[in-house]
Length: 103
Image (cartoon, rainbow, N blue to C red; front, side, top):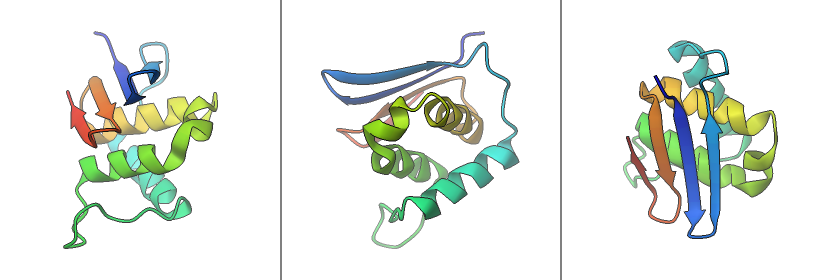
């Protein structure tokens, strides 16, 4: 089964992480990793209520990580593995311009 996380920033900027050849990340490990990144990047919740959905956390971490981290050969694939495991989906598209996630 194909496993891919695709992140688009605009019509010219895209990151594709093929995860088939990488070890799967456990859900608890993925959530802990995203929590740590959310804190390290000083991310803010998307919703004014302060409620933070898992999908929102994935979006905000991807946005706040920026191109430098997404281009990093260690950080980028780790983020993709964590996003896929946290969301429980093998195919994930993160659209940063629209701030949406689709499966």
